[in-house]
Figure: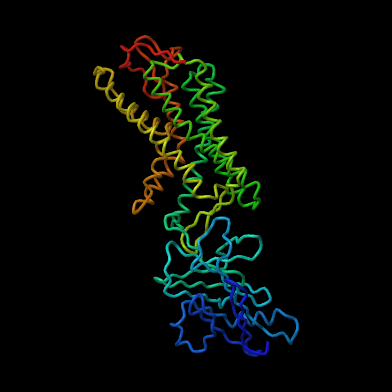
Length: 477
């Protein structure tokens, strides 16, 4: 090049500029963009900066590193700035500020700049949390990271400070999908500790059942073991998920995401099964009238989630998912659903139906327990309040009602409900262990699940007189 700069026009949506500073004592160069449709200009007078919506400043240190990295004395430092519009979306369909990507190169690898390159956007309108990100240019789709990028926000002005050269863009993350860095760390610690404790207590429940009490187990207990088994595997998948994600193996991550999703859907299904079981138990004075009852509820409970997961796995809906924190903070990566619409339909939509059913069932059963307490004699009511609290907590955990706190995680109270949701569900295995242990101690010995006048409604309802004992016995097939 004989000139100090030259414009680049690479076709629709691709424009740029080539810069060649003086061979000796290079100074920083500032390039301004007046609008997305107009070519860039070198700004020699800093008083005219207000005329440009975007300004890129290339530091003197970057040009010096460019010259020093070449072995030939005659090497002339240069810089190329290219703007790409309407680039292909990344795997997460991220939204880019003003829908553009900036590529900066000097012909050699430039990293670890102390005098960083600056990209400044002025008076831009955006929705969400802007995060300056970079991509090394490999792969068929961008893989954005905030490594080497610092984001500064001042109202409608955004500045990216960059310590290396590659492709750059400002990703806009929806506000409701980000939390502060400290909250993300706290919730992560609570979840890991809670899931670890839950796995221990769930394992104890399974041990007590299969090695100590299996022969004495009734149908209600067997249903609980399916629920506990599903939760144990869900917690296990969650704890090893980030380890699999760190391997950066797409096949392993897809399998991991599918496995965790399967046990999540199975757990949701067992919530509804337990609610149905309790309603049926109360109404029919026991469920032993249904032939092969356990088999009939187990097949759909384990089978329906498998069909959903197989379809999603075959269509490539699982992969690496990034949970964002504040601007410039670290993110958490896990193997999960990569399509937010699928997540809303399959997970949120399905649990909404389960929650509506289980919560209605919980209110009915709780009302029945309160009515029973009012009709009991004074002698039978002594020191029973603590037991009833355990009963209520156990029913909430068993039916998965605590998952409903996620529905209230919006607005000013969003973080409060995040913490409540995380604590209750992370320690759900511990709550179920207390519930199982207390009920196993006071379960009547060798009593049938129903009788002509009274029934033992399993799991905390104890041996109350059945208010439906005057109804004819229902025989279901």
